[in-house]
Length: 202
Image (cartoon, rainbow, N blue to C red):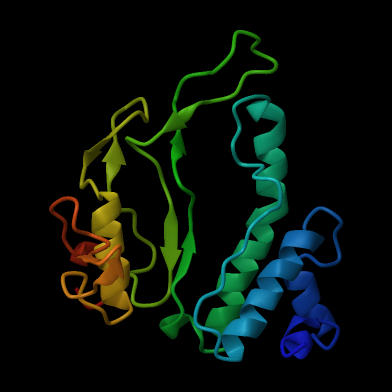
């Protein structure tokens, strides 16, 4: 009930609705989610997560048919969110992360070329960040020529956690939580670092 006003996008201008793709059946659903995200950020909500229902990105089959459809649903609304946050002066203090749990292998899964997909790949995959202290317009890291594994400027999951926590003003070596009577750190399992090469202020 408390969030009713924030979730109501009817007061947004026609130009804003068009920016997010609310005028198009393909982009309306995710565009509405992105627009609500901006409205929540404006109202001081500190963490907002957006999802497409039914885990559609796990393309083990029919990647040729499904992946372009997913991109068509999400590309315009994502760009609108970043642009809108920037125009409203919110991007500098809002970290936008686009990513998932894992990448995809650079080889097909399945024998039927028309219905094939791609299996999981945890050795090399991409995500993007915007705002919140991140340098704009750059790429960090490279995979091998096949896109199979990271080979240059590797960023481990713990490096990523340490960097995001740094942007939140937290020292990953000091942040602990208790579980079963013991203290744990998010980044305790391996060596890691804040990846300063991607930060505006290093």
